[in-house]
Amino acid sequence: MKKILIILGSYFPKPSANGICVKQIVEEFKSRGVDVSILATQTKGLSEHEIIEDVNIFRVKSRWFYRALEFSEGYKQNNVKWIFQKLLLFINKFKNILFFPTWPLISPIYTYRYYKKASELHKQYKYDGILSVYTPIDSLIAGALIKRKYTDVKLMLYFLDTLSGGVVPKGFSRKWLEKRGYRWDEKLFNIADTIFVMKSHEHHYSKERYDKFRNKIKIVDIPLLRKLKNTYGKYEVNFNKEKINIVYTGTLLKHIKNPTYILNVFKNIKKNNQWNFHIFGGGDCDDLIDKYIKRGEGVSVIKYGHVDSKIAINAMLDSDILINIGSTVDTQIPSKIFEYMATGKPIISFYKYDTEPSMPYLNNYPLSLLIKEDWDKVDESIRLTVDFINKYNGKSINYSEIKDSYRNNTPELLVKYVVQLIDKQ
Image (tube, rainbow, N blue to C red; front, side, top):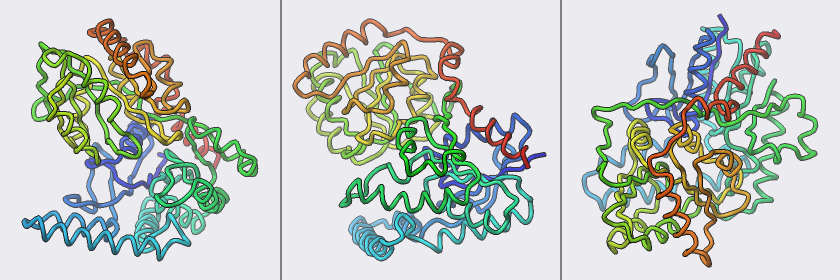
């Protein structure tokens, strides 16, 4: 039986977006008879080792900063909590400055914990391959160190995000990110056997400087298209079925995914007694949403904050219309659009730039409307939104049709490449 170790950041039962993607890959590996182990970050309430759905999950302690933040949540006095968290942020900022020359590697001890545990696991289980997932960079470095020590193991780097072409850290330039990120790309790519990059990042990796790694690079896609199932009971959402329920799920961030435009559109739609807009997800936009809610105009907005992923899935499945908000980062595909499409429900996607990476996928989806956030054309956006919802409310597409159109967005492609690579040994 083939054995694979996957190294990543946060995995189930408290997954990151990358963890959700990896879960689908794990299921595909299992269906092919591959024995999979997971090495992830340990957060509050999680053990160092547990078995979930027949998968061994091992964990290493997270960075001190996140452990301290979790500890601070125990303070009952808000002023004490505020002071403590501000101190933590200051210390973390100082640490980032200290490790500026090695960015984004800012916690070598955390990286070493990954490497040490991965080394122990390899001695015990004798893995055929290691799949290191970015982010965090620590998982890539740990995988590279294992490859150097055990040259017979196949190392595969899986870039669900791009290191040298992603979000620019505050206070720095795109040019600085490209230069710094490529230094790490070059080091890690030289060691790896295969590098998996996203279709949306293909242009970035087509640059001449990557030509020397061309035979290692494989283009794959977000592996999140899967048939979704309701999980009722404590995860039920209980929408008012007499109204049209419009749903957004995911994080909202002012500098990346700002909801101001969509809220302005909904403010001017006179459907306050007929339409509900449900927002599931955290972020830093509560003040914008609360301001809209207080005004009491237009479509009714109901805010839930961060919720369990099962609640979010139930909300999608019970919705009438789904809302997507495009990112300011033109290499960042919102992974939830594949979950959206898997529901077969109508989707309205608001985008900021013509390079919005979700557009090629949504343009191919029959029940979609894409609206550019143009403040000179708000009235047109309102009209398009109302017409679309009135026309497509209650309509859906069968999952089998969707799967045929988006076959590369299932986990099958990447798993096929991994199995082929291991078989060459």
